Length: 115
Length: 117
Image (cartoon, rainbow over all chains, first blue to last red; front, top):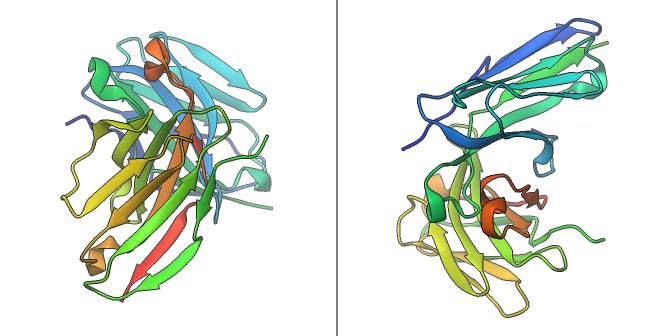
């Protein structure tokens, strides 16, 4: 069974601070995705990283995929109250046809950014 | 274009009852996945359907079942409800084909929140 360990579980910071969320596994993933979920809504995709060592930037958010494709990180620069939400990492396994529609999710990081 | 629609949004059942949840995917999407989200376990995969066929199944008991219709709409059913089945049930649709199954985006609905008393 593939697992994704996400940390920290909770993060409470002031507006303007930087933060990093980590997503680690002992298994190799074909790709890792980061989703953001707000209360009362379903998760929404932020980014997909596919290649080991890949770095993607989305405005103030920087995503990195580990060289061995077993881990990923999300870094937010100068956090804003609008960044508040549940951040989830998720990965597709390498297991061929058994991966259809099946994402393995981390436990999530609840981020609160105070004005 | 319209997003993924799930009904009902909220429902309350008692132990032993059964429940059916419905999901209408984004137009053109033929793959529908179901997930259970709880505070303790997070998001866990239930099953995935494509063209009315279940292609993938998670580690849930047989009380959890699903089906997909020819118009790609999907339903999931939970029989003999237990207190632990209280959760947010999320449906996701996608157009995953071929190698996209390893990288493709899932589009989630807002979920059906089930409370079992």
